[in-house]
Amino acid sequence: RKVGGWPAVAEDALSRCKILPECLDKFKMSEAEVTEIKKQKAEAQKQRDINIVKIPHADSMLQTAISNLERAKSTDSYPHLGLSLMLVSGRRMTEIYSPKSQFRQAGAYSVFFLGQLKKKGDEEGRREFEIPLLCPAPVFLRAVEVLRAKQAQDMEKDKIYSEEEINTRYGGSARRYLHKLWPAVKRGGKRNGCVHLLRSCYASFVFYLYERNKYSLHYLYKSILGHG
Image (cartoon, rainbow, N blue to C red; front, top):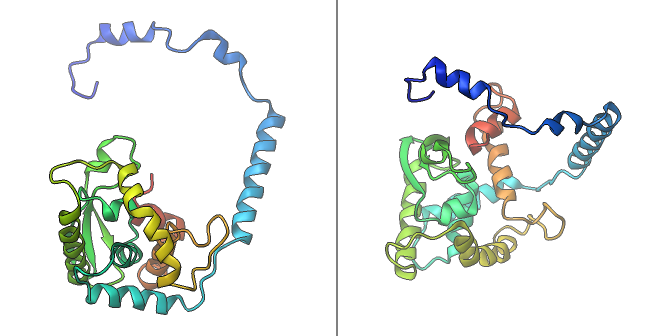
């Protein structure tokens, strides 16, 4: 159908194919089961709202990241560079450290990003989109160049590293260094103290600095984080 030339006889043949088993109609949840699932989802959301992560003096946290990137040099450690890049761009750890990820300037405080993960193999993962930054674009792009030059000395040339290999190589040090770089991000808890928390911090900063009166927080998350 997508490429055109789909004849009526093919449509008729497809309509007569039994794709799903007959027993599928019998395996349906009752109304009581559906109601119970909705209650569980509502309770889970309530618990997430109660346990929301609060970071005091988050503005100083952002200033530290910007300062790190402005002074980025090859002797800086991987987590020192990577965590700062994550906070100002909202990209996942594996997206920042993956040599396949590409960034190019879009505006004074935005870049085009190519290399979105978790797109389940569709075309979206191979399509660039614009993301706002929490620092000037030239500062961010230069720091990315410093990181890539540092990686070029340690990684095999032309080898394609998987997401798991990137996480194994850089994940442990990033998690350990997170609390050293930003003590306000306390250890403990399922969400608090997690490197992925920087992604939420980024989205909250963007919401309050850029788009507070334009979009809902959830829509903003979708558009700048690349969610489906």
